[in-house]
Image (cartoon, rainbow, N blue to C red; front, side, top):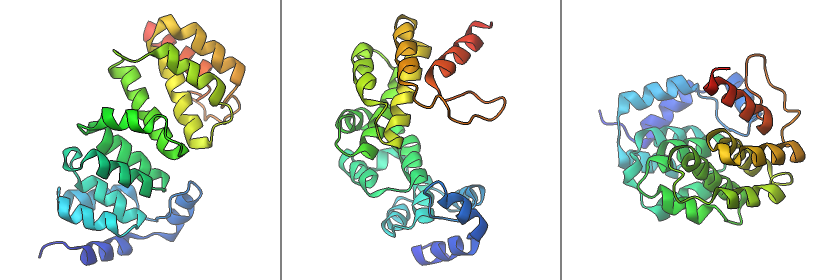
Length: 222
């Protein structure tokens, strides 16, 4: 029997765990499905774009996460991906959409440029996320000094998601581009963004100066 929206939604409802929902809701994600189990459902169903579109259209967070696992990055136009991002307010849905679909889409650079200066901080954060990807993997053509010029006055007071995305870009510039490392460290030290963020033992702090220093130390084998 072929999977349809009703049967898949019933399967997801059966996987709902109230305790997991309570944990997820603290992070803004309104679902209670174990992600390992969700991936198991996706593996069983396999890539199915029409079903994925129908699941996305439900607006349900677990259904949208499953939909993203059933999609292929090339299956949507830039405008469709733009609309999906603007509809997706659950943090995990946004993360998966950007990382699993947009970053692997042929429209990634088009969307990076479109989103990078968007007035919506959630959308702009996605643009910064795509920019960090380029800083690390394809920096040619990026004006890194200009990126630092943008981060410096804006990051301290940016909304949380945008602040994290800018901080990531700052750290990646410092880590991967030694010629800008001193300036990246200076900006991080002066702005003190995430300086007091609680970091578990054996984990790297998201505070950019510590993050940069730790990764550079590892890379240089110190």
